[in-house]
Image (cartoon, rainbow, N blue to C red; front, side):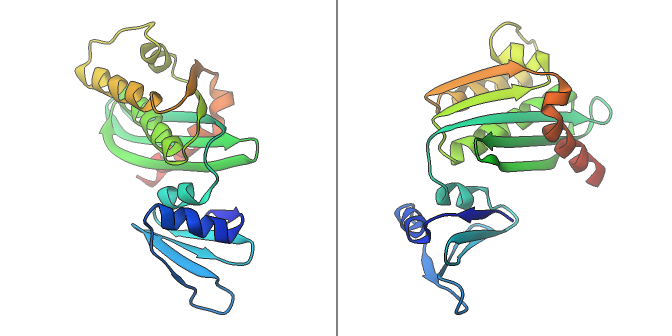
Length: 197
């Protein structure tokens, strides 16, 4: 459940500009409430708490936009193909802004890695970052996206096109391969998702 410390009136204005209906709070302590999809934002004096199963879009609208973020992604499958999961993390100078892990059905390791990369880029796009530095521990995926390796797999080629389209939404981006220990939180989230499958 994300807690965003902010000017709650400025946050309210951002929501209203994005077309989100904002209502009065339900208690004396609540300044206002807003809902979108399966998430609800509740404002108090100096913070907004976002609840629900998919808070990402609402949370992105509430945070200040722009700036730079570091993105981490990891995907894996148990069996190849087999049950697959992904993990992703967005980090700024303020610490972890958002993270997630989920199962994605049956996939290969490489398909799961691409799905994790697409998901973290979509999340960073929701947060409206200007600059992203993306890191993952799959050398194959990183080199395919950077154009150093090609792929004969039509599904991976399609996912690579999606990644390139998402990267174009940022003013500046980098993509680098890092050791698994640098990517440990994304790896942990992917494995936790697989454990729940």
